[in-house]
Length: 242
Image (tube, rainbow, N blue to C red; front, side, top):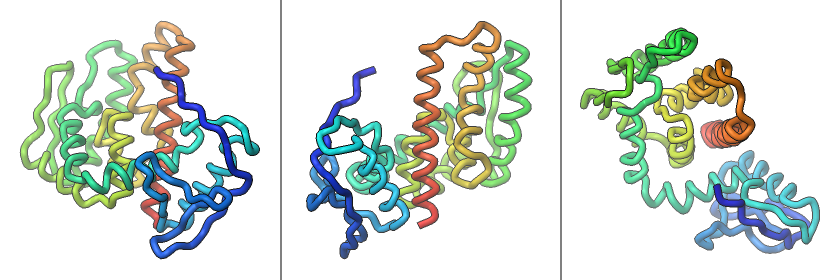
């Protein structure tokens, strides 16, 4: 994993300013700009206020070093503005294949602890998804590829296409992290929270660690993934309530 790019704080104060396109975040007098030099405008005031706090805490004082890792909501908004909005159809097309490879549709046959937990925790969400979207999912034991029915694929594609720009941005982050459209939809529909989604998505690794012992490097990776899921979940909640 590459080391995070380090930046140096050049401002003293962060301000929220109303603008005809929403709200701007000013670093002293300079507006925050995104990687492609787009000036950041946010229509959601609560989200804008949260982003102000990110920039206030990015290095405690002028001259301090910080990284974009400390600006998760800014990164999410930047992704929405500069990547998702200009390429919505492309991102829907990128997400759709995750349905055939959805984690919750591939069940283990060993060890028994994992089999039992998948049955107990995954199946209720598979059943919820089927009822919510009026579809029938194919599930199986093992790793042989699954091809969901064209009706199921089209139903999910329509759902993704009708998400708001912010919601689609959250999906573009969460679906790959979770390996599951089912889990991401359940989060969006307030069936589960971020922590529970993470636990279900990484059930296999958790059970293996319980059997064979925990590895500090692996645990560090999982902690980072959990943090990323929680940050994307916060963005999804803020953008959905706008």
